[in-house]
Length: 255
Ligand SMILES: [Zn+2]
Ligand SMILES: [Zn+2]
Image 1 (tube, rainbow, N blue to C red):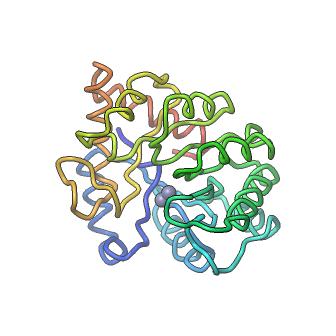
Image 2: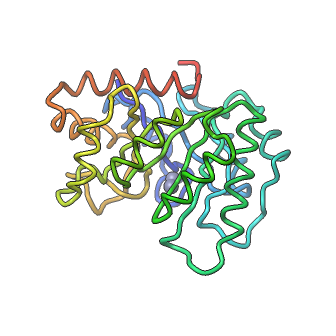
Image 3: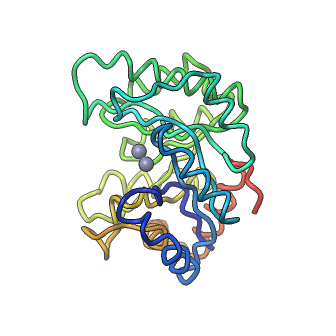
């Protein structure tokens, strides 16, 4: 009924209780989850988890927040993405909030991922924070529209959402949309077409209301769907059905 399109089940806090997490997903009606890579070092762990569970997919990529770690090349990413359980390239993108100074390396790394996605023919998972303008510019310069993808844990304006949608990207909402003060984001969730939306937890971070402040997990994605349903005046079932359908359309993953 629901799919968590972005989680980090391999992170401390969740890694120790993977079978319990899968059981709670089932109880909450969360049929699938996409476990997203943030570096090459932990990639084998992420892949093994997806290989061992038919309802868990994986991605390959290096997060923009990780400085001074193994830098991925286009060839390496394409090679790793060839595995049938790897449905996307990422997470990648730009983050000018956590890091400052000369971030040329971050932009170069982002370009590398877009080139790899185009070569591999797989969609992108894009993280953008305090860097919307550069993110959209690099997406356009590198032809990201060719593969499409998702703007994950979206917190930007309606204009940024629309620009990304125009390039064939989906907009994914996390628990942030359930926060009382996230008024602008609630408006984005109300306005953009349901056909372009995904839902996610980004767990173990950003637990939605009513679990705010606790360790997040894929089962909680239903609260994101609930808030979107409330905002749009539709049923939670409709949000679940449409976002699941969108997930399979984007990631071409076998159910
Ligand atoms: Zn992210
Ligand atoms: Zn993430």
